[in-house]
Length: 123
Image (cartoon, rainbow, N blue to C red):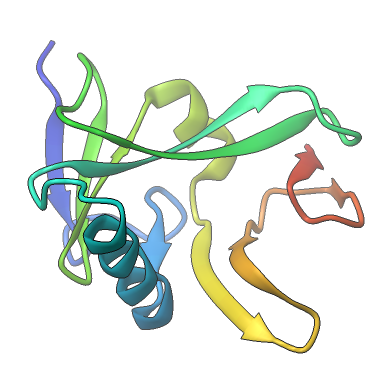
């Protein structure tokens, strides 16, 4: 099965992921600073581990993998594999540069518990 592309308006609430304007701007800035081609997409995912059971994964990929969901959000192409989407569906990725630290923030409505660092969660 090929990767399926959706825009932010085509995904139903709770099924896809969302990027805030601040997160999208930071992703685009990181691409420029690290010489990552604009054609590469942002990979959002989860992996086992972390103090709460699952950890978030962020990275860049040249192409979507087979069966990936592809979202175009705020001008950023986002790849999410089906297993990860099961755990992060409905998540809003934000970027914080406030007094409590700088970094991406996952606002995941499915996370039943999170750790203090905000990088892992449990369902």
